[in-house]
Image (cartoon, rainbow, N blue to C red):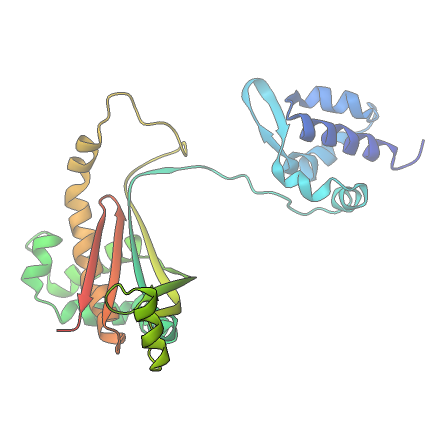
Length: 284
């Protein structure tokens, strides 16, 4: 028997189960691949390579993970089983009770300035300076703490809360087309263009997105709502924390962005998740 014969049988078995999406036990796997019983070869491969390609299920069964798609070719699989490297991670799913999402929409020209400005808010000293510039009594209305805490200790506690809730942002680009001014007829739009004006404008928009999960966490991700749970009850329970997040997001990020971005007629902020609102800042 070729020294790769067992590996080829293993690959054929996994490929068949990957296509069929069938579950199997560890014992069925070992028997089908005809690994020698008098050696610990299968156990070694199982621990170092095979187990990383499988997803556990009920009753000690497994199915082939989507990561196996990288190894449907025999040569790629053979390379994997002869190396001790990780193919897939053992992910643990969690579900947050609520989420808030804030998205800023602005022309692409502002992206560079905005990134530089926002990045300063991921440093503790910068956040502290911004908090100190605010009224401490106003801060404590939204983030109450024990009265005996000194201001420095209070700001330290508040920085930990900020660190937990505001971890980062992402930037995406979308292409759009916008009309200038009132709705015009084809003839009117043509006349505007003949006079070197513009009626339809193509513009690339940068979307700066913040996703903020909060509330209780459960260990099972993406499960159905519990029977009897209503949206009204859910929102009532989380409104206090949502208001706190909204206040400090405005204090730290919105004010910073409005100050950093200039030359725009309007700045749009779309709030979604816990509630849906569109906030617009316009030149007066």
